[in-house]
Image (cartoon, rainbow, N blue to C red):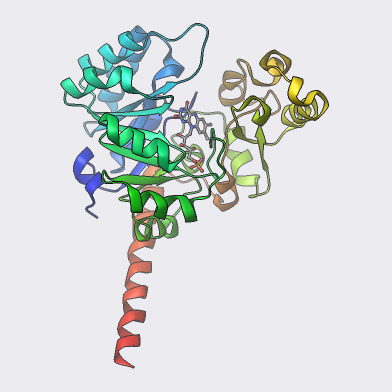
Length: 328
Ligand SMILES: Cc1cc2nc3c(=O)[nH]c(=O)nc-3n(C[C@H](O)[C@H](O)[C@H](O)COP(=O)(O)O)c2cc1C
């Protein structure tokens, strides 16, 4: 399939693996890229420019296909060395950067000068338009369903995607709640040029996370995520567990007196314990409602091939239905 996104990024299928903390290592990105999608290394998980440079080199050893790096801009007392991270991205010959969180303007000139395509992940039409106005090449429109940070507007993709299509001139992909061929065809119908998946890619053979994480996603239903940190206006959709229920209890008790420090035990530094050690009650970890549609742990190639086959079948069936309708 050819879309504005496959052409822009030089990939075979319009499917992107979004940056994911402690998941988006070289193994993940290379597996997705080798299967014809766009794999993405999560820059901040590596933390330092030196470690990111090594990870980019490792990924390059595993694939000769295009892959990207995610740079997430979060409010932080000790900000990461963004200029250093950008430098190793450029020196490493990476051709796509997925930005997320705050406005990525500070890194755009250097990335654009190096000929790197920038896709910014946004949870609203107004942020998408801002991304377009500052020179991003594309946006990833992340609906309320998504795993991770859905923002504070709570607009699901059945509204958000057509709204983005009505307003944007640059291409966009759907993100949040995407899992299969149905998701891809629906995204295209609503004006997207492809789709971005997070949660679905964690439950794959190559995802470099503990088996417990993959099994938890397969076992979960669409009812098993919770929104945490809403009182701090830093809402995150996570898989429910003991720590999350404790965190929500603190939110109920403290109300608008809640401070970030109150929930540190449930959110700070928990990713390695969950993703690497498989301690599933260690804290809050991002997971989308789409877990309810994830029932197996295929290879990335099996997953992407299946999505493209399903999309073909759906489009062929719809064509037959249209033609039958016209003939009648
Ligand atoms: C475990 C996990 C970690 C994530 N970490 C990040 C991150 O560090 N930076 C980022 O921009 N997005 C992050 N995301 C969001 C994904 O890139 C993607 O936008 C989201 O998962 C899409 O929703 P879905 O899970 O319904 O597919 C994360 C998502 C998950 C599930």
